[in-house]
Length: 428
Image 1 (cartoon, rainbow, N blue to C red):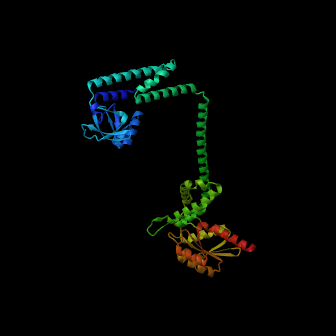
Image 2: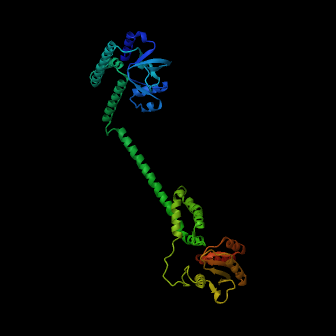
Image 3: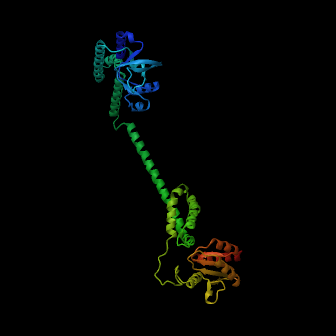
């Protein structure tokens, strides 16, 4: 018979008059304002877990075994009790039935009996510890005696004994396995292989990303001259001296989305496009804003372009570019231009040019002048050549009159395209 049951019987015998309404605790326990919380808190206490959560959230209290409690209501295996006399700050609480017993104050004879029972429990607990230490030599004897002893131990001590026995078994098992055990070796190799595969996968992904980045940079390098021309056309200063990058930023974004993505897709690097885009935009700016090292020369020289050169030297500079491509170029400023600065010809082709060395965007005037000069000189093609970008009205007017708008860096490639076009027409 358990110790708590013995104490309960003694209490019933000693105080029969109060057995119906007054209770006292058989041992310290946990009580809460809600029955479910009381059940969970007692289970947590038996397993040695922290009760802080229950105390804060569910208004639970650890109650010692002193004092009396009046019954208010019953709820299954729970009793709603109130402290007698009432204690300030301590509301009625739910107790599990096994933690309380009927009765009033404990007399001296009851206390002696409880002390006797408690000493009986301690003695049997010590004997259980000794039996556990020698259970390998006296297995049959311990098997016969342990059930009666366990029934006399509190539930908390039973749990501690069970955990201790489990730890000893696990320790013995780990010593028997050792490092030579095949299962341990298998786990070691499995973990090592997994880590190796993860590292290998990360290395392959990083290497593929680098290749994708190099592919994008090679594309930008191959189009560097065109990007530099577009940058010169689209980056300019407004009337207040502020450098405007809006059109250039849009040009960059469109170039990466169209040209670079198509290049990535062709090479199978689409999944790295988003990650590589910021790096490629930065590299594109580096390439487009790179200028050749300037040769120290006088401020105006028709052989070398300079933003500060004389406008007439700029016309001669454009004529020299045409002559290097095999065209015959005449600068009309030396003999009266009639709206044209250069008239160039080659193999029956005649090109009329208007040259504008500007620090701001070129407007409609240049387009109108070269359109008139095209008819005057009976030119087949006409173009405006400048170091600056063109206004939107100028672009619209040029499209209507079939006038080409060029940067001087495009001039030689432009005349080559004209030659190829004329050759194709002849063959056709």
